[in-house]
Amino acid sequence: MEEPTEGASLVSGPDGKKRRVSYFYEPTIGDYYYGQGHPMKPHRIRMAHNLIVHYGLHRRMEVNRPFPAGPSDIRRFHTDEYVEFLASVSPESSGDPSFSRHLKRFNVGEDCPVFDGLFGFCQASAGGSIGAAVKLNRGDADIAVNWAGGLHHAKKSEASGFCYVNDIVLGILELLKVHRRVLYVDIDVHHGDGVEEAFYTTDRVMTVSFHKFGDFFPGTGHIRDVGAGQGKYYALNVPLNDGLDDESFRGLFRPIIQKVMEVYQPDAVVLQCGADSLSGDRLGCFNLSVKGHADCLHFLRSFNVPLMVLGGGGYTIRNVARCWCYETAVAVGVEPDNKLPYNEYYEYFGPDYTLHVEPCNMENLNAHKDMEKIRNTLLEQLSGLIHAPSVPFQTTPATTQVPEEVSSQCQIYIII
Image (tube, rainbow, N blue to C red; front, side, top):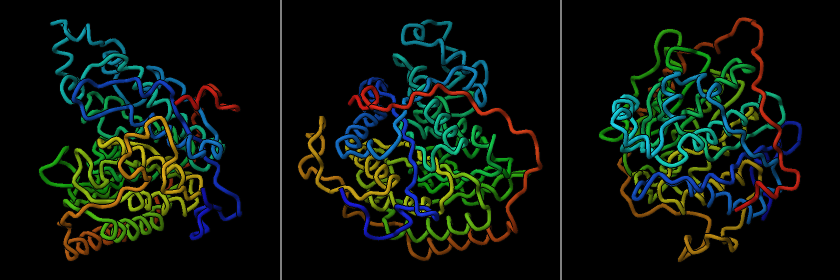
């Protein structure tokens, strides 16, 4: 493990100190199972954690077990009826004819199946993101990581796209108790529709989504979708095409985010690191390397603003584990060896047994002139925002009380 040789901002803040990273991991997360043949596999989070531990990254972070978010925590965004349904449904009860209308009403069934422990899974994911926000609110961490979070499709009263509870919205609502403005950035191959919809009419949250657009789930995220009411021009959508490579992505991401940071001046940032934008993803269509994906985190980290880092999509699970392990290393400020340490899932990473995923020989359908047009359109939109919105003084809501479950010796949380 080496300290990075370039980009001093990766290691230190303006005061010369390393970033304090708070990491959330639920040891049972890998036990949840969406069902045979379903592409969403929570086991990938356990695989990522396993690599993180074998690289010794956990020794550079505060490791936390997330508190299980209760129904009252989840109801801060989701409706009472929907939360009650999630808390009560089970594979056995879902077969009851009286439940069928609820399944349809809440969009639960096929893409979003009922599985054993469904609500427990939601509680762990949401609890990690709320807990991460609390750490940032208290000033106990500079960066907070929850790879079980990032479930950006869930809506106020329905499941969508493998997502049931929108932990991101819950985390942002917690951040807004302390921070005037929050920036949300989404680099999943799918549009971050659930988060955009939740904050579409407010200027206190700016959403920026880089995603495949066209005949592709969820079908939203047109460049002309810019927000409404007080939130007009505070939603940015970057519609992309198949084969997006590192150079093309960097050429859009950096100038757009640079301008966003200058104009919006967020007090906190949330980055959704969906790994289905990597090359070779089972459901994705982009061609990013792990380093190209992680460059987004590297760049946002350099602004020295409180930063929450979340998971998301990702369906070639060996590459998801690689990506989130490497991005954890970026968060703490080290450059891990490309050769993987031996670990419990070593056979998954053959035949090369390396950390990095290289792009494949895939045509990039994002023409330079089209990328230039997108960049200029969005920079022009941002230029119309003369200054960051101000928030009138008000009594700060009480920060959510979460149990202190920091592992000093790491036994229970380093279970792999």
